[in-house]
Image (cartoon, rainbow, N blue to C red; front, side, top):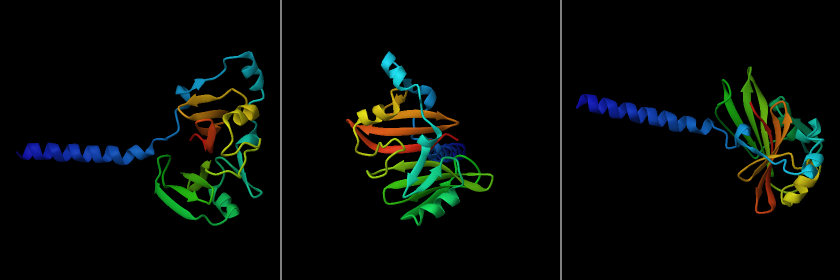
Length: 185
């Protein structure tokens, strides 16, 4: 009887730990599993330029925020967030933090005792990318601006900028619902 109770208690502990660490996975698709969309010569030609470093820099009210940069400086420049939350980091020692602003969210991760910019997710129109695409635009605006050299998983169109940085468009129907500037730690 004691062995059975000990076994059940152990299983419950293991399952609860597994569930608590499940939040550490990214909801973004694994780049290695994404399908490339390079079907036509025109698509290949449109994509030759690829992303530039400026394409993965988030700009809001004249403030430029680079991925993997000092998050404290970014938050100070952007101003007070509506909400700030944190959780045990999946990326290093410390806390991952989420700063929620009116129309976007900034996520951070700890590295060597400092918070770094992990992701910025734009959730509303009015904050265009460097090439003018914004939430609410048709998918054709994305491919016109960035070409067809994207990787698609589910409803994400991901453009790889190299160095772990990407620009991702969450598309539902024919419309951009969110834009994510993402750094793959």
